[in-house]
Length: 391
Image 1 (cartoon, rainbow, N blue to C red):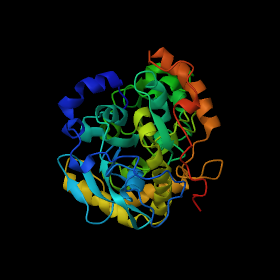
Image 2: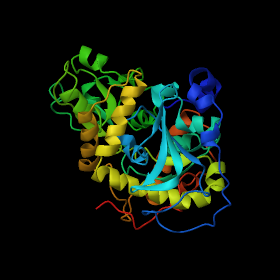
Image 3: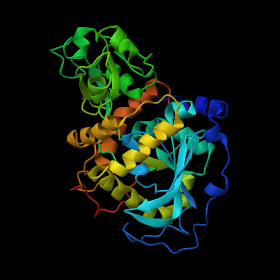
Image 4: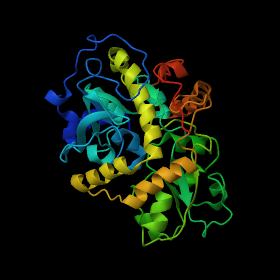
């Protein structure tokens, strides 16, 4: 759920002990000058020791789930779980080989009081990279700029979904307008401002009070539509949620015109500059980890399910959901090579076009954006290994 970062920062230490604590011995930053820069692509045997921090820390945007599998795939066996801090730490593994440093993956969303990864990175500089969407990067560019370095997802998994039995003639989000159906979403989502500003949906029919649960969707018998993720809700509602237990129809917000990258990894400009030599090695490892994960998700999914059990914070997730998420991501081409044929690179023309779409929307809601923002201000392919592709 997107919120104004100024408000998030002011409340951060009240709601998220995990985010407010300073770096400890496990997360102290190592010098970036003890090893010469290298262009070696990620492969078995690559070493990050002396180039990257002793613990490479990632911040996600939600509880453990398959959308984050490429990060959990980096965590070696013998990991340590901090249930109170909703995080896991272990050896950073690249295609089965120990890289000589540790990796820590921190959960987000409700686990940290819905503080965004960007706000958490600004609060705690020991977080090297966190999930940054390009729409969030545009919105926050004036006050909390970020630079994204890899896009493991080519298409945003976010959807608007509806009951096909109630609305058999609705095939797209735009078709919902004529029905007058209520459309629930997390308040503050910019894509909804875009949908209403462009007439895709009527402002009177959208409801920003979605709480992330299926209760209202079930209670009104599918008369309302709501936001979700294609990698989660379609499977969950049909196969797990016994009070519904039937298909839902959906369209991605990407297909409806809001083409932001999501689940991309970015950092503060200061950290990107400080750890340039690290990122030259680390980003290809992340690219390859996504390929490895979707090829064989079993080990990482087992870790995800173990974390769900150990965190025990109310988040429900099972093996069927984890496996289905990977299959949906591949079949819907959410995880796919970029137009240049590379897994993880940004299509700069797409980002430029998105900025042209997003800036007018953000101006209407008073966002403090960087003047004359361009794609090069928020994303880079500098660290991408162009030889890494999804078969």
